[in-house]
Amino acid sequence: MSGMLYLCATPIGNLGDMTPRVVDTLRSVDIIAAEDTRNSIKLLNHFDIKTSMTSYHEYNKVDKAVYLVEQMRQGKAVALVTDAGTPGVSDPGEVLVQKCYEAGIPVTSLPGASACITALTLSGLSTRRFCFEAFLPSDKKEKAEILEELKEESRTIILYEAPHRLVRTLQELSDALGNRRLTLCRELTKKFETVLPTTITDALAMYEKEEPRGEYVLVIEGRSLEQKREAQQAAWQSMSIEEHMAYYEQSGMDEKNAMKQVARDRGVSKRDIYQYLLAK
Image (tube, rainbow, N blue to C red; front, side, top):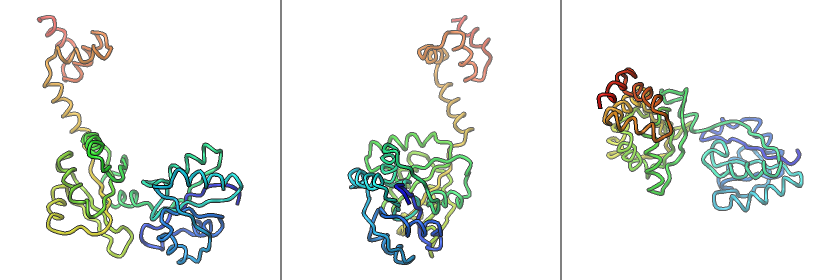
């Protein structure tokens, strides 16, 4: 192998999900960069992989990326693994990938397990369009901004959450989104895998009485396009026609096009808007 980065997906629970291609690659590379070497050594031992490891995690991702890129410049092959799932998804792997491209080092991905995709396909909710938010940020202001954005999100929403924060997150989702359909997935691919189609309100009531256990993926129904249209229509109706016209004219529209857009927004004819303004 020449200098190159291999993104190697590892099981999210069931060791049977490790692909032969990943096993062969981990045996062949010069270095395995692991999010937690104490966790990954168990995986390597199971598959009798003897390749040396180095740590690569959130707290050393920049300095260690520089070191790994230099190793690849010298012709060494590096495999990146995360604690579980696909590297670069909700982990610091994206930094190493960026550094490789900046240095002209090729990168390839060896696909495999991914908790977000596994949960989405199990959810029973729409899979055609979805957005992945991973863990909501701990910063209150940033979290509030994201929740505000998610209010209007029409795609299926996927979140990760730890058990000790689940009730708080469900309450925040309830406050921001209202009651939506929700599928709770926990311990995916493991012995006690649970998939529970429910609602945000019912899940919150359940876990206020029952202690959450295991790692969770929350798959949440997006706001329907019809609901968004109705909400927008209500917003326009709350404005006077003069305010509505001013909104578009201040954005750069001329009067003629503003009248067309106001009429479209309010579900009336352009002539109705013209006659109303003429009467004023």
